[in-house]
Structures are given as structure tokens and as C-alpha cells.
Image (cartoon, rainbow, N blue to C red; front, side, top):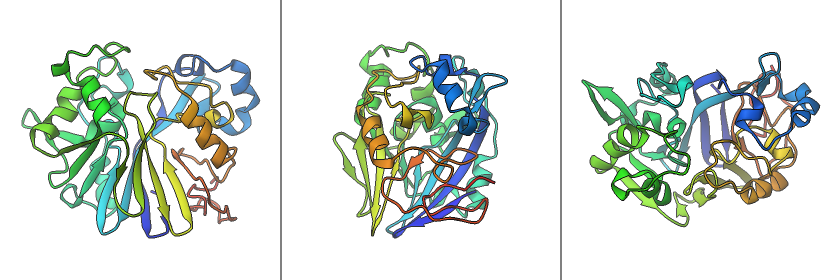
Length: 299
């Protein structure tokens, strides 16, 4: 578990899964070249790519933020016991995520706000849990912030047919509708101020309503990029999209890559962390500890 403080906001990483996603780079990132992976193998392997098996490696995690007196979760991972016929790695996953959250000092009832940066299966799973055969909200006292464009895109009542077919099958029904039916969902459109330090910004492309969380507190800046980035290789080659991008658009990724600079060992760690620091001095740190950039130095 990694913890840092940026300005007045404390940040804790709560891990759900780290390992192979059972997709080769050419499948996960069809726009990327084999040469790009090989040229960067020295720092992509083994944390982001297993060259021997030729599979991508990824982390599924939630960001626990404590800001302005509230307990906030950014994305809720895959969830347990979810039926995912078109995402075999996540099908009926069973992890100790809630135990990890408890070890970070938070019970489900403590959470004030849940932010889903978008509504893909690996970002909304712990919105709900299975209770006596029914999906119920995991965080009963929280408001769930969801991008309206994603909500409407996947809402079966709207008759929309997602362009990627059935890859997100069952997700709205088991991880979105139950919190909507409980009256816990707040939809937003063109940006949303969470508090004085945190703001949601739309970055459509990966999904119609994909977003990032921008943090600005004191002299510190950070972005929680959701799935605008799936691999640090996209910092070097921002035009590369994933196979899961509904409407590929690299403009937001280019802006992040330009402002954050190229990946370095202090910016990317094992397991990988998907938050991009925009303006932060990187100081030398003790091996294996959180760095001033918000990433753990290699350990």
C-alpha cells in the first residue's frame, strides 16, 4: 500500500489485482509496433510487459483520497463474483479488496464519495457487492459521481448499441443500476468541482464520457488519468490507443504526455500506478518508498 500527501490531500493506493491481463501488446494496443516495445523493454519489463509470455501486465486499484474532510474513492475496480463472459480475467474474480480498504483505515460506511472516471467493467465493480443473491451498494452512505455520457451510452433503457458490442456485458445491470435505484448516483456533464482541490474533467475517447481527476493543492499538481493511459509506453507514443477505446482520440493523452514529461523510474513503479504527476519535483528517495513524484522508487 502506497501513501503520499499532495498539498492538503492524502492519497492511498488500495490494490485489487496486479498481474497479466492475458493480452499481448499487439492485441491490447493494435496501433503499437513490436519495435516500440522492444526498444523500451529495459524499463517496461517486468512491471508492464512480460516479454517471455508476450503479455501485458496491469494493476487494478482504487485511489483513496482524503480531501476537505471527506473520504473519496476514485474508481472501484472489478469487484467480486461479477459475471464477465467477455472478460475472462475478471470473470467471477474473488479478491480481498475490502480487506485492503479496511487496512487503509476505511470501512464501506466511511466513504462519502465514489468517483467512476468511466463505466467500464474494471472501474465500477466494487460499486456493488452480492448480498443474498442481489447486487447492493457497497458504499451505502456515498454519492456516486458518474459521467452522464457513459451512463446514457450503456443504459439499456436508451436502446443504445455500444460500438464495441458486448464487451461490457452485465456491467450496467450489476454495478450501475443498483446504485442508481438506491438514489445514490449524481451525473455530471462538462466538468465537475469536487472541492477546492479536486475537479473532474471530461476526456472523451476511451469511452464517450471518460474523465480524469485533476488535483491542485498548494504547489502540488496531479492527474488521476483513469484509462486515458493504459501503459507508460503511451507517454512516449501518445497516438497509440488500446483495443478498448470506443472512439480513439489521443489529444488528451498528448497534453498529459507533454506536461508530465517522459516516464522515469521514479514516475513508474511496481506494481504500476496510473496517476500522472503534472508539476512536481522528483527527489531522491529511499529504495521502495513513495517518491516525491507520488511513485515508488524501484524496490
